[in-house]
Length: 265
Image 1 (cartoon, rainbow, N blue to C red):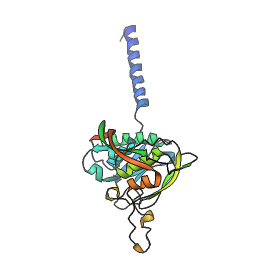
Image 2: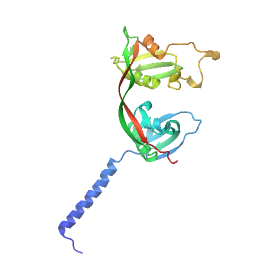
Image 3: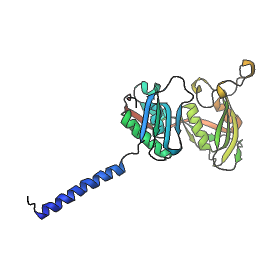
């Protein structure tokens, strides 16, 4: 059969275009784990949370809501929507990337896994919400400035933290988790600091980092009841010279529009 030369050239061009588009789609495909296992978490386990590991291994014991928060690098209390089980049922995810991956790349891979296996779809919203401004109280700062890169927060017992080389943004981030509301650093302090903070957690802070016993047991001898101490608000002002001022402002949130329970493996 004879084809006009012009038609033959068009046919080759079309084939190359289709092939190129396929390659582009492959190159632009969302990052994904090479293999992943998903099962309901056992009722008794040693830890909950997320563990990105060297070599591309990833493990998590978390609710879908917590996984969405981790995948989009946002605090869990900024995630809304979805059925009740998405906030209560925990799943164990064990996955492996094809090659070594950074935590940021693993967040992208977890987004793909949530979409593929949980059929998650989300949308972003900016809402007006209650928040706190972390500011320097009147008078001299009680913070001891340190040298070096930002360090860590150590949890010493109920309502006891010890901070090594922590900047104010890091402290504001911890207070967000503790209080369940946005905390903005407006102290104007730009260094890193060593300090201890002791307060009495209230019921709303139960189960948050820094509010439970270390090593699974309380540090009070002979089961003695702890002396009542200051609230976190009073402790910040008296011990660090900082203050939390309530306010309102725009907050970025993630809304879960759709989610389904996954099939195992």
